[in-house]
Amino acid sequence: MYLFVVNKKSGNGHGYRTWLKIKNALDSRAIRYRHLFTESAGQAAKVIANTLSEAEHWQGVAVIGGDGTIHSVLPILKDFNIPLAVIPAGSGNDTARGFGIPHDPLSALDVMLAGQTKAADLIVTSSGFTLTALAIGFDAQVAENVNTSLYKKVCNFFRVGRAAYIVGILHTLLTFKPCSVKVTCDGVTSTYPNTWLTAITNVKSYGGGLHICPEAHPGDGQLDICIVHGCSRLQLLRLFPTVLTGKHVHLPFVKFMRGKELSIHFEQQRLALGDGENISTGPFDISVEPNALQVYAV
Image 1 (cartoon, helix red, strand yellow):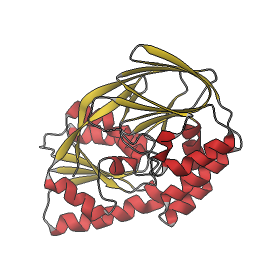
Image 2 (spheres, one colour; image 1 turned 135 degrees about the vertical axis):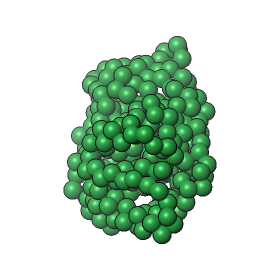
Image 3 (cartoon, one colour; image 1 turned 90 degrees about the vertical axis):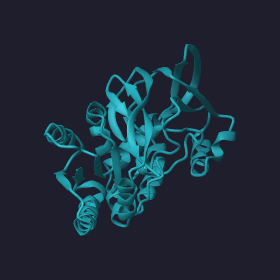
Image 4 (cartoon, rainbow, N blue to C red; image 1 turned 60 degrees about the vertical axis):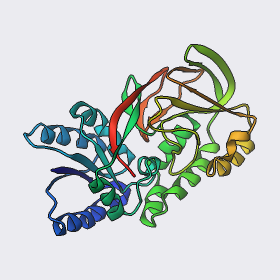
């Protein structure tokens, strides 16, 4: 038996439309399933926990929605030791991208039904678990501005979710002010002045396809960290087109590191988003829990 959790509002209603396609495919193949509707990421966690407590052999939980809906159910899937299946229907869809899951819903369904899973690490903070990326600073503020904007709804309507993040970068660049940050990675401490962002990732991309840590792998037991510091606003603006392809790795104001435990202290209060969801304003103590989750993947 599969459990489908459908966020009807994700992707400006794309979640519900996606579910109708999936339902038709399940019924035509006579596949046993249950489904639950939710209209928010937080609501999804409660309904899943109640359903999974029922006596049933659950083969997997499929989330039809965005990264935020997936984020909210991570603790439950981990506790119940049930694999996650992703049917992308959000704006960024970085979870699907990070695990090679097709954007087409019926193709994503086929990935789940094929039955092959991959072990995934989880990023751990005092606020809980994150699967894709933890964004702190400018990138988090971009995502926050995008999530509360009108242009996100417009981009979702035309199914160009990445475009919303590009607009958000320009929007945030006008007001954001960088500051100093102290980063301790596996016991080694460094200070970076004039820091714009610190991204901790479990997959290669975030923000709708920005390849912020091209060497990241979700099952290697390591956190990948990207720090952008010591650059002007114009240099930062020029940075983001290179992040689309990962060519920013050669820029002198971009620092990469890798480790299992991190401590991050910004000089000024900074917003942090895990899987696009607001989690904290710091300071941040971060670790990795290897192989904490199974994900249906290619």
